[in-house]
Length: 104
Image (cartoon, rainbow, N blue to C red; front, side, top):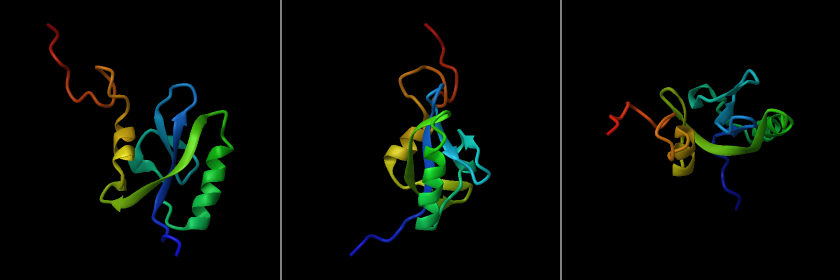
């Protein structure tokens, strides 16, 4: 028996910057997950995936990621996507940095 379709977003990495980006309903790539189009129909998800893959001049590694509806937009259902939306963790700056750390 096939698994039931779960909501998805189209995600990729920005071609030049490498940042995680999400496809919005108005065909923009946004670094903000709360702006991503939450897709609840499997056929529509496949079409949007093809739309994203056709933009190889802007993004790489386009795929569908499982999400759920949240209070402020899509929310990850898997730790991998939760980790990806925070950005690189090996730099002392960027998305994962919440407050400046004093330097010794």
